[in-house]
Length: 151
Image (cartoon, rainbow, N blue to C red):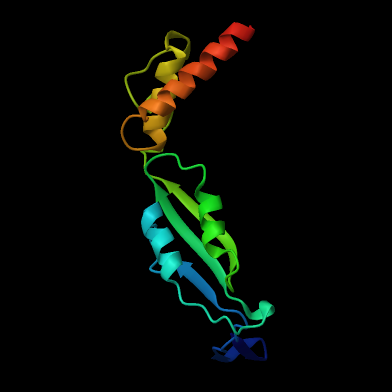
C-alpha cells in the first residue's frame, strides 16, 4: 500500500501489486485439508514445468487430515516429489479427533486410577477417530511389557 501524507494527514492511498517471483502451490488447493490418499493422488497428478530453472521451482504446501496415525506420510510425500521441479515447504497435518483434554473425554477420574492401556486408548481417541488398530494396540502392550520388565 502506498500512502501519501500532507501536513500530517492522509491525502491518498494506492494498492500496489507486489510481483511474486516464485509460485506457491497448495494441495488440495482450496484451503481445506485432504485425506492422505486424496492428497497423494493430487501430488501424482500435479502438472509441473520441467523446464523451469531450479530457483524458479514453485513452493509447495500440502494439507492433510489424519484420522489415524500415518508415520510414513512425510516420506510418502517426499518420494512422490523426488526428481520433480517443486520445493516442499510445508506439510500441515490436522488430527481429526476431538483434540480435547484427556480429562474432558469422560467423567473425571484420577490418572493414577487408569491402566496405561486406558490412557493410551483415550489419547488415541482424542487425536483420531475410533479405536486404535489391533496391531497398534498390540505394539503398545509389547512396549508396555518391555518397560515394566526393565523396572
